[in-house]
Amino acid sequence: MAKNYYEILGVEKGAGDDEIKKAYRKLAHQHHPDKKGGDEAKFKEINEAYQVLSDKQKRGQYDQFGSTFDGANPGQGAGGFGGFDFSGFGGGNGANGFNFEGDLGDLFGDIFGGGGRTSQARQEKGKDVAIDIELTLEEALEGVEKEIKLYLSVVCSKCSGTGAETGSKMEKCKTCSGAGYVQKQKRTMFGVFAQNEICPDCKGLGERPEKRCSKCGGDGRVKEEKVINVKVPAGIAEGQTIRISGAGEAGFRSGSGKSIAGDLYVTAHLKKHPLFERRGDDLVYKLDISFSQAALGDSTTIPTLKGKIKLKIPSGIQSGKIIKIGGGGFPHLQGRGAGDMYLTVQIKTPEKISRKQRSLLEELQKEGL
Ligand SMILES: [Zn+2]
Ligand SMILES: [Zn+2]
Image 1: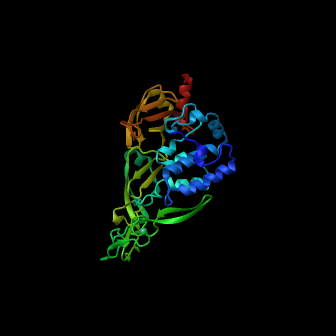
Image 2 (image 1 turned 90 degrees about the horizontal axis):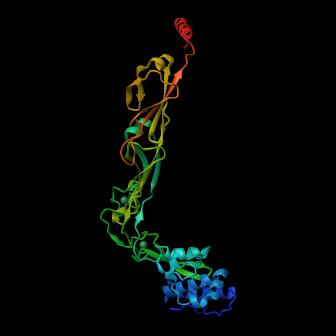
Image 3 (image 1 turned 60 degrees about the vertical axis):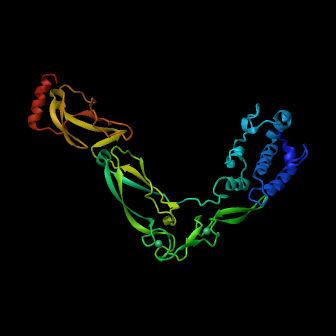
């Protein structure tokens, strides 16, 4: 099927920009799919033509290679026309195909972007809720269950989320006659368009309670304090977020079965520890030892996040040496195993010494130590 963009817009080949724009406005208005007698295919074709002819570069290419371009199916990618991208026109989700800006873009976004024209009730979702929690390194190592108090919209206990007063039935929404959406006039540079918007009364459900629930006012939800137990997995790191599906705010009239609750996002923050530092899934501890421990070796105990453990210090160890305790770090959240614990050895020089220590050290000095 040959496409003559000038013919589609009903203008001469030498038409000026203003003329093309004018013709496009008129035709776009006339064939707009939301209008009575509108034609979506035709509307898309008009837009395709306008997109080329309103662009100096594209129009130049089109004029020059017009004969080969004729008959080329944009969906298959016309050979040699790398500059054209019509991918959005055929795919149904046309919004991507339009490169317009300003109110035209908004307009098309509304029309093709989903939601607008469909008569199906869209699924309402309650708001997502995000909170932060603080954890000690011990909690992050072992995992913990945290009790969190939230003040948020929950399903109304009186009407079980239907929004209807006890004994009252649901009826067709009068505002939208049960369609779930209402028509709105939208003014654009192409004139006035009728657009469908979600019904403000039933929010797309198409029905509403005959008599509204006295506790929630018909919303099907009320604000309440709610306690949630959050299971924090072992190994969680700073800034990681746990998503708890459905633990956010209740949806509008969730009792209708057409709306779902939002999600809860819990972000972990790790408190600073006086002894340990976390690096990735490893744990770092500064091990201070005395000169004699370093020279002679020693059996000692050191702290870990799970309690004290015994440690053998080998004789002759140097300052700056790192001792690795395999598996002594945080469990890997993804995959098996755990990080390690690293002890960085530092030989401490005494700042104050007793008279006896002094004389012993003087003896050592004489021995060349
Ligand atoms: Zn209620
Ligand atoms: Zn309605």
